[in-house]
Amino acid sequence: KKQGDKIKVGFSQAMTTDDWRKQMTSSMKIEASLRPEVDLKISDANNNVARQIEDIEKFIANKVDVIIVSPIQSKPLTAVVEKSIKAGIPVLVVDRKIDGENYTAYLGADNIEIGRIAARYIISHSKASGKIVEITGANGSSPAYERSLGFDQIIKGNKRFTVVSIIHGNWEKESVSAPLKSILLQNPDIEYIFAHNDRMALSAWETAKTVGLENKIKFLGVDGLNSVNGGIELVKSGVLDGTILYPTGGNEALKLALKMYNKEPISKNNILNTIVIDHNNAEIIENQMDKVDQQQAVIESQQGAIKVQEREYASQNNLVRLLSFF
Ligand code: FRU
Image (tube, rainbow, N blue to C red; front, side, top):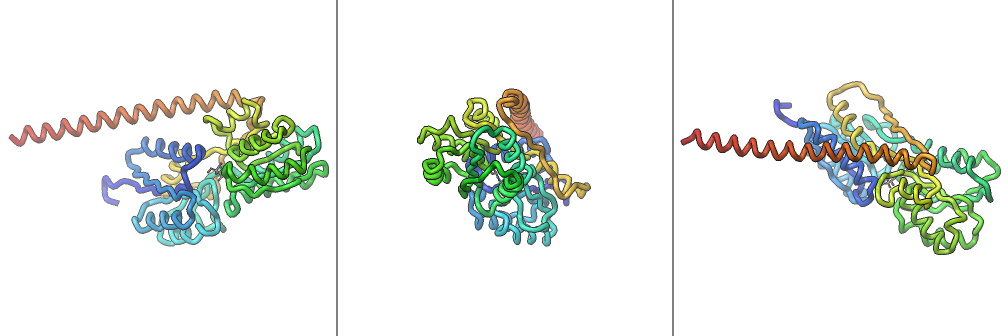
């Protein structure tokens, strides 16, 4: 690298339609803005696998220094990640995984553990039928597979509980209501609904409301965002019984990518912490997250002020140069 050349980091984001992804991207941008040596390029695949493969191909062709990717699906993204590794560009996989081990490092919460935590929560809070409906994330994406796996491991060991039905959702609200409605009409004694994220859990609650069951059934989600209609708000308002925090890791991802670039030793699997958020701690966690958000806002406005000063400095410099010419 020539002196003054920036470190090129390419981030292939799966999509940016939901608040979880928006927060991931914005926390990565903030981290990058604190490091003038970094040139962060973000591409948004808009939930289109072919497009995500192209996005990564472009990063490889443009010879970026490091690639960060949150793969929409595991299998179809595996080959292009391997191609990048072969081309000598290290790859940090975040949140969703590819198949196999051919990547430089992974960053994200343990999704098998998230499934287990959900199951244990239900087992220890159940007072009624023990009948459960599970609503999964999109087929082929690793958190959906892993959350189901962990959930099933714990539930199947306890005879009092049955998963009456599994709805194969797609991470988004619209995949829930039609199938859930007919299940609820046939099983009005469902006690718990575990949805693989809070958006689908909210949709499940709304669907239950249309058949008058929203107060009988208890709802668990995943993500725990501190935002409008986010998990924390839904817990506080009593829509959800609980949610399991799934941190986006946007800023950590950028830090790790730079360590990879600098060839510092890092572990292959970097696991982010998780926690159950329910009525006992929702308020406390909300306050903590508010503080972090406020600090981020301060950093952002300071960065903005610095940019303005830089621009003024540059234009004054030009003026000085121009004047000295005469
Ligand atoms: C956001 C999201 C989250 C979920 C994660 C899994 O796009 O759907 O709600 O926890 O992806 O990868």
